[in-house]
Image (cartoon, rainbow, N blue to C red; front, side, top):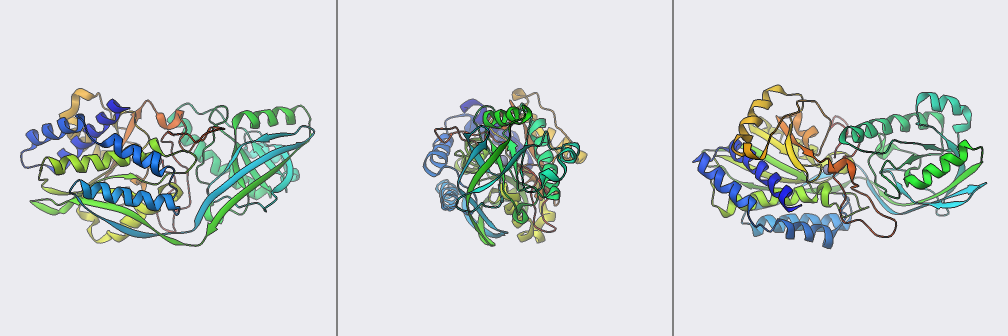
Length: 449
Ligand SMILES: [Zn+2]
């Protein structure tokens, strides 16, 4: 991972360097890139975040420790840093989740609750398990009234690329709506990751979701589907033990190096700090949080003096619905017009191929110019699509030009961020994205990675 991570840092650093316009541009950019490609404490930072803190859903004690980790790392690098609070709409944490298929054939099936799923009673909820096909309109029409009060098992395609990930997010929201309309007792999505891997991403209704919604390990879900299609009658007993609560305060970490000539103008580089807790959040998004810190560290260590203020933000509440970045936008509303460029770094550690520019063609030449000093690490191609996405970008792109990197290979999609294996919590997850979720009213739009 070292080479790819360093390449990412170099690219991000370069883009930043070009955007902030150092006093002696080419020399400073070269120095910064050389420093970023050399030995740095980045991997030690990431090890501490993932091994010692681990999965860090917003609202958890681990998340609070991660905030302290970020603060400490920035300050140790000689970069001024503070926390900025914002309000999360509701506390949701999974304590445990289990399920057992019963009826004609009985077996245990590993499950993970979808964020903001309703809990079951302490002894679980038992209901018929029905074959919901792909969860389409036609599938629910076929089930008809039988879906009422039943767990609907929905099959999914195995995930192989980033496009599939976003398709999955979008389709999950439609399935959820159909299941609610049908009066289903709950939804059981087949894990799109192979074998026994689990993950979570948001549902559409989020805090308003009134029924259990879960992901079941692929092998068990496919076994259940085959049995149902062979005419066997099955039930599912699911037990979701959740910690839930009302609105609460969470914190972003905001650091900055003040500009010299135009300190009121801001170039923002951010990555989300929070993760789900099925893994340790290494790829989604620990490596990029460490990257942002290292970028600040190297600029500081070299004594570079950016003309504009460079602001480094570790967002929180991203997985639940980009609440941290939206909180930033609200808090800094008065200075948004002076934000020159924002880059959100997410979706794993693969080599950067270019940047998503959010359907803002005027940004494309800016990003191309910023990447010119590292053309040798290319080729790069910007994707100017209004992708709903990562992290911050959706919140921020309502306010200023935002870009975020495309990656190869798409570690996001292939691996398993927020995943866990049967016997151990996985160390690395991929930076998958997260799905549409319920933004605050008039707040950010859905989907993040
Ligand atoms: Zn992410």
